[in-house]
Every structure is written in structure tokens, then in C-alpha cells.
Image 1 (cartoon, helix red, strand yellow):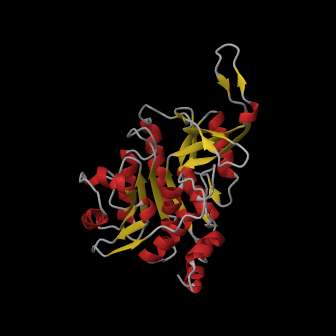
Image 2 (image 1 turned 30 degrees about the horizontal axis):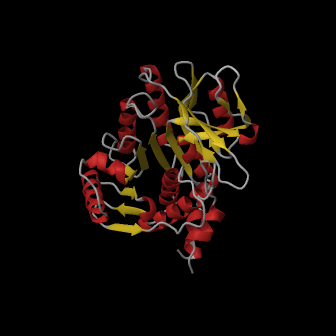
Length: 339
């Protein structure tokens, strides 16, 4: 991408308003110093001593972090946290980020705040090593009154933004933010505003999502189509069928093979991933892609331009170790601009 075009696209970011409706988790990192390990007198097991606790928005919050890193003018969060200590921590972390609007982010005693707790062993001269993660989630259906409230807030936000991200991050249907009622609201928003840009991702695959722009990985495409996918041409064919049937672009991330983008007319483009430049941590790469695709498309980028920026962001993020990272515009420039 030429420098002039890069700056033309990213120069519009500060004027964009992007809404996120989805499941906001707290990413809680426990920094463990193995030099301080002890043995429990009671159990004889090793005691890992935590020397630092770090919290940041996770899941949908990771995509919000990426939009904030791009200096998007305003990011409107639609979701919930529990009326608990983790919810307080998550809300404080969200409020600390520039340009984040929490008017439609609810605190409710009816749910607990979802948490990804990540113990990290930090040893001098070595990359951080993550132990088994400890997750806290909601296992019962989201109460109907909360669903209705979220759906109404989504419709309100949809009339005042340049783009929307719909992020279904829970494993069990109907236990998070993007329930069937909210999906009905998404369809209603698109009918009311035919030019509205909506990009969606679902951890369970996009089979039951409305006809919006989709982002997924190859494994999620398999779950959506039911076809075994073993090679690039099969991925391309299945993605093209999906895009044509839904009438919206489809983006498929392919790990080290990069990203595939397909338009409803079956026109497609493929970009490889950037070369690895040292130790990597792939956590958060897909979220960086999602955020950068949405921002670029909202700013008027073409399919290929959006993919170029997304691949640059993924490369930046995977080289940030021990955290779920984000990429700034200046970091993207070093990889995306090619004279």
C-alpha cells in the first residue's frame, strides 16, 4: 500500500464512531516468579507466588482495545458486567481507554463478570509461559429483561455509528450478550439503515448470525459449511458459496497462510501472513484482524486494503508476548506501507 493511501484511510479513523455489541471479559494476568516458589506444608504441592496482578478488557474488550489503539474517534460498548469486583475492575479498565463510551454498558446483579484468568510464569531471559487458564463464565440463559434492554440499546446505538461489530464470544448459546433477541435487533437495524456496515464474529461459527459481513477462521468455516476443508482451493470455494448466499463479504483467516477475502460476486483476494520476526504468541491475532477490518472498511478501504491493514496488525500483535496486544497506526505503517 502506498503511503498516501495508508494515510488517507487511517487519517479518517479519528472521525469514526464504531459500536461493539458483544461479550466483554476481564483478562486477568497473574505474574508468577518461580524463584519465589514454596512447598505447601498442608499438601506438599508447589505454591506459585503471584508478584503482580494485571487486568485488561478481554474477548470483545480485546477488539475494543485494538480500536482504541487505532485512535478511533469514539467506541461505543454495548454489553454487561456483573455487580462484582471483577465487574468493577473491567469497567475501570474500559473507562481508562480514550474515546470509549460506556453509556450502554450495563452492570447487573443478574450475571457474573466473565473472566479469563491467565497465570504467567516469568523467568529472566525467557518468554512468558502461560499455565492452565482459569475461566469464570455464565452457564445459565441471559435473563429476558436484560436481553430486551441490550437489544433496545443496540438499536439506539446503530442509528448513530459508522460501523457495528457483533461479537458472540461465549461457548454456550443464549448465555451471553448476542442472544436471539439481539440478533433480531441486528436485522432490524440493517433494514432501517441499508448502508450500515456490520461485521460479526461468533466463537461457535456464524451459522445463526444475520446476513452481515463475516470474519472467521478455517475451523469455524468447517463448522458452518459442514464440509471437510483440507486445502486452500476448498476454503476459497466454500467461502465464495457462503458470501454469495448471504450477500455479504466473508473473511477467513488462515494462520501462517494469511487471510482470504471473498465478495458476494465471488471475487476473491488472498494475502499471506507477514514473516515471523522472533518469538510469537498468537493469542489476540484474530481479534486484531477483526478490529482492523472493521475500521478500514468503515474508513472507505477496499477489500484488499482492509486485508493488508489487518495482516499488518496481526503481525504486530503476535510479537507482543505475555499479553493480548493491540497495534497502533504507527506500528501498522512500518509493515503496511510499501513504496
